[in-house]
Each structure stands twice: as structure tokens, then as C-alpha cells.
Length: 430
Image 1 (spheres, one colour):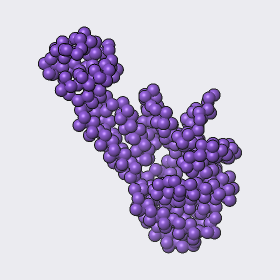
Image 2 (cartoon, helix red, strand yellow):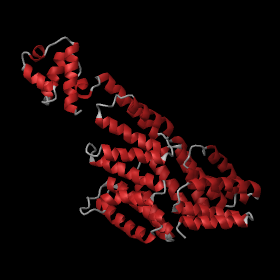
Image 3 (tube, one colour):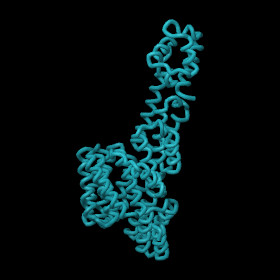
Image 4 (tube, helix red, strand yellow):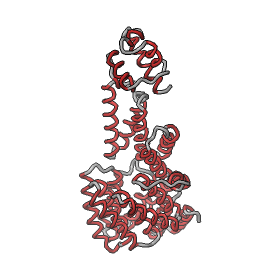
């Protein structure tokens, strides 16, 4: 049933509830035949006519258009705002529940834009809960059912989220296919911030697949596009992902240059929460690029930790910061302090994505090995390996297996170390 049919049906229902005939409703401004055509869905009333009919029927214009009263509309919009706030604050389970309840009660049936907002929010909350398969189903449903009703910005945002979910689930072919359909078609769209986000997802997929030559080339293309576009967001995204590409290809100094440029732009134009998150990622890059300066990066991370506590950052972001502090303490040969940090990380593990759980378990095994607690380290490495076995085979997973192999070698577990090396090679197709 079309929106036009629904409007006519509501007018007919309210008219009958009021005990009016079509002629009585029409008189004197309209003809009864015109009212009949509206009620049957054969004519679309103008805004002025709709206002007139709402007044004569003593009902709200909002109800005639959308099927809900003004009060109900306020309740729906408030519920959507609360769900979005929960998502922004990292309360992802609550956000998922709120969006699902909104969609289940039927109040959004006549509100296609708000329904689309709720479906998109539910997909993002589902992804944040680690349920990638269901998030992919929801995002594909949006693309298939609501494409015509989507504005260009939402269309790109859905593609960004879908590519990211495919990549995190290990389906790199689809992770690349989604953005390539938009960015590399016969007619290439003009770059904007949304398309830059999509380009970043494509670059990340190239890196995860191990296509580092293409990643370097595409990274240069994104930098050039961002410079022409000139927006702070585009420049931050392009330089940050270029830093990741440089790290992966062994160009540490170049990575530092790009990371510092991204951080400088974000410091000038970004909000405090996003800046804190970028500082955390920056410190992680620097711990790889310049491990001899670990004390400096630990000090940076301690400031980030305080900023995240004072902000609405999610538990996942706080956990990642704590893990980077563990890495810094290990580089500084302070395993006792590393183990203290790991207790906080372990308290947050439940409900996290399997890949992140594996990373945390392996890091814990490394800190226990540094303390000389070989049996405990072995148990944590086994738990990490169990998580890895459930995670998709990606470049990240390969690196995690490699970490496990090195720590197992250190605690004198040669057979398990060899097996972990083999698993790392299998993840990259060797």
C-alpha cells in the first residue's frame, strides 16, 4: 500500500469515527467527489487541503500524514535519541535493545525515514556488539529495501559500515567489492568526506589481504584526493590510514610523518573524544615504529587513559588503551606493571569480538612469560589460540598467530610454537 493510499485510508477512518459523510466533510470548501477520490487513494491532497481536513476532522496533521499523533511522534523521536545516545556512549547492548524495540512495536510503519534511521542504528549497534553476521544481514537489508528512499549520505554510510563488517568478518572479497562498486565505476563520483570514509575501508581491506603494493598506490591516491578536498576529516582519515600502510610495508619514518600530520589536524579541528582515540592509535603506531621511546608513548597513553575515563568512550576504547599501556610497560621491562594493567583488560573481555579477545589473551600470555610464570602464560596462550581459531583468517589473525608462536618459543613450547607459525602462514595463504 502506498503512502497516498494510507493517507486516504486514515481520512476515511477518522471521518467515520466522527460520524461524518463525505459530503459533510467536504462542505463548503471541497466537493464530496474530491474527498472520495482522496479516500480511495486516487488523488493526492495538497498540503493546504490536508491541513483543512485535519482541522475539520479535529485530528493532528501529523496523524493524517504519518499515522501517529504529534505526541506519539515526540515519543518516537525521543526514543531514537536515547538509542543514539546509548550507542555514542558505548552502551551498545542497550542501544541494540532500544532500536530493536522501536522497530518491533510497529510505530515506525508509516515513518519511512525514521524507520530507516532505526534500522541503520540497529545495524551499527549489532556490529558494536560483535554480531557481525547479523549486522551484515541488516545492512544488506537496508541496501536492498530502502535504496530508493536513501539520501546519498546514508547510502554511502551504509556501504562504509557493510565493507567494515565484511572486513572484520574476514570476507575480504566482499569488503573490497562494496566500495569498489561505488568508487571505481565507469563514472567516478566527486570526492567528499563520506566517500573518503569509503575509500579508507577499501584501503584497509587491501592491507588486510596483504596486497601491500596496491595499498601503497591507493594510499597515495587518497592523500591526493584529500589534499584537493581540503576538509579536516578527509585529511585526517587519509593521513592516518597512510600511516598504517607505511607501518605494514616497513616504512617507519614515513608512518610517523603521516601519523603526526593526522594528529595535528585532529588536534586543531576534532572533538576531544575522537582526539583521545586517535592519540591512543598514534601511541600504538609509535610503539612499533620507535620502541626505544616507549617511556614517551607510555606518558601519552596515561593522558589518553584519563581523557577516556572522563569522556563517553566505550569499554572497547578503554580496553585498547590499557592494552597499549601493557605493551609500553613490557618494552620498558616492567612486567609487574604490565600485569597490573592486564587485570583491567581481563575484566572487560566478556562480550568483546573474538579477534580482540585473542589479542588480549596473547598479550596477557606475553606479560606472564615476562614474569617467568610459564604455566600461567601457557594457559593464556591456549585461550588466545582458541579465540583465534574462531576468528576469520586475515592479516591481523596471521600477526596474532605469529605473536603466539614467538611467546611459546620463549617459554620453551617448541611443538606448539611450530604449530602457531604454521597457522600464521596459512592465514596469508602460505
